[in-house]
Length: 527
Image (cartoon, rainbow, N blue to C red; front, side, top):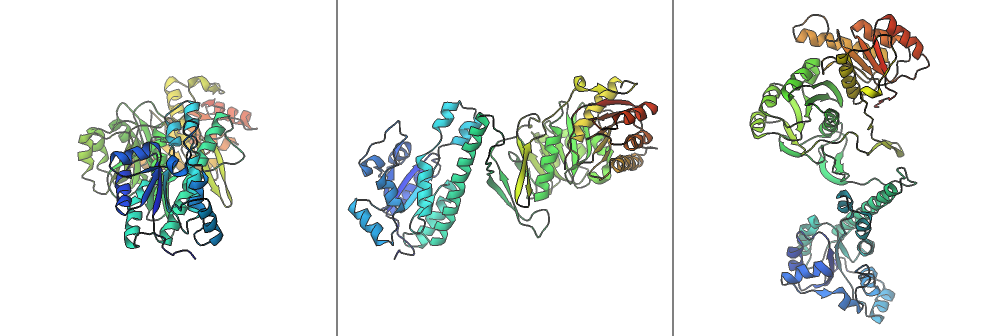
């Protein structure tokens, strides 16, 4: 019969991350816990005056093969895996002089960080931990008697539990730590598996594991009755996962989702760019000579929807841009950097969440997007496709002007970030009408035009902002009616993927309406 609260008499400590190590080991030493260790971990404790027994001395077998084999020994794993309540186990342990190990403190070689740092293949392989995962899994399996610690952030909880339990740990804590331990080895193996798949060019392997580290427990999900948390995959892509929150309330599930969409959008542009997002869709996007100019142009597109929205910038926000932003109620502002002067200006908006990312993501960088289904998930490449002037196929009789080409390319880049069916009108480097998420492309065209009329009235102008604009469609026009709706709204040029069986009919309609039209051969569905 095992003790409900087994006292810790012997611990094995071998850690790559040595933060908090000395204080934790000193606590154990003060309790007269015998400490086994290896290499740099043992040296760090000795340097702090803590008595340590080398694992090689404990097993009677030295480290071999450049340290690849040191803890893989029956006197180590037998001491961890031996069941304290099983007399046969205890007899065997005594027969082979195997001392019980009650606490295992192990974190793994930094494989993920080594890969992220761009190390060569040999270095990455040498940072694949073998003994560490074996120790962790052994200790977690025998959690009835053994405490396993894999994260330095759990040291304090273990210390408090030992203090409350006369030198032992509670079963509840041991089970929680076992859960953390198995999740850690699963994530570690998943990272190694993905790396090998990438090295062999197999982006969609037979088995794909998705892992993450919890960054934040959220108050709720999309709705108050849904629980939620935010995890990062550790890829260090500049954005919401790397951001530092400078001020404002805690970010919500919807804030995080919308802010990510906003920042990915502005990363598309080389010029200073601003995007204003509402419910993951842009309600205004613009480029300009400065962020202040871009913000003013973006806000004009749909000032009503912009209220309570998310604003993103692809350049450091300066005092002029901050002055323009402070008059509108915004939930979040995100940028690679926010100057000291801009921070002071935006600090007057107490509830505004202000985020600084330290960089802008590369929109062409490889990556994956997942979508959860009822019993599985879809996995696809990130939509990295971008087009320039040389990719355009002019299919109409009238060629687009230089300004029309610039606006067409801008509009199509925005279209990539609008929910399908997506229609984007643009003029002079700014959106002037956006239709998103409709079942009919004609409806998207008409909604965008109507909202442009509302925006014109709000700006004190007559007519609609879309007059003289260009229009982008995320997919081909299956019929000429969607194209004609855009022409009726006032568009002068069209950009679309092409590829419909009715392309000739649509091209003829464009020529009839004197529209310039270009095909891209690229579709940007976003569901």
